[in-house]
Image (cartoon, rainbow, N blue to C red; front, side, top):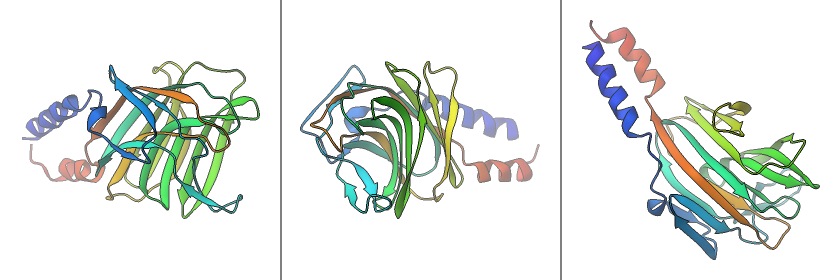
Length: 217
């Protein structure tokens, strides 16, 4: 019986490996220019738009473009990002969002002439962590893994070797919107591309542990 259960779970996991259907995802703050072609989202990021709440700057904004689908359980999501970043705070990445007071955005951000791996975690107020890069990069891969009440954020330059850049709390057993965002707080917009976006379902960890303890051989 135990072998049958794990075989079924493995099959279900295999079915979720394919890229998400971008055309079926929803916009929050739809930008004026965007296109989906060959499983790639291209968009012109809305000028003077961002996500931030209160801390340090004293203002709250929630008006940047975000294309998403909603998930209720545990998962691994990843995407390849490339953009024509121009001015301070131009940014693009993945966002995981419960509501306007609880979200994580992670990706690449152009700050003071340098590229930074950037993560903003918001629970009522926002914080910001960065990893400065020593040279420009053509693209970046971002991966997010949701397990229980934590989300781990990783980056990669080749979709092979991933390095953790943040581990952040997020309430579990709560539906969460997962998708692609760009923001341009200071500038007049820029072009960005999102490729190979995928979300792979992960079997619920607590349930798997229960099955291990309660399933007969």
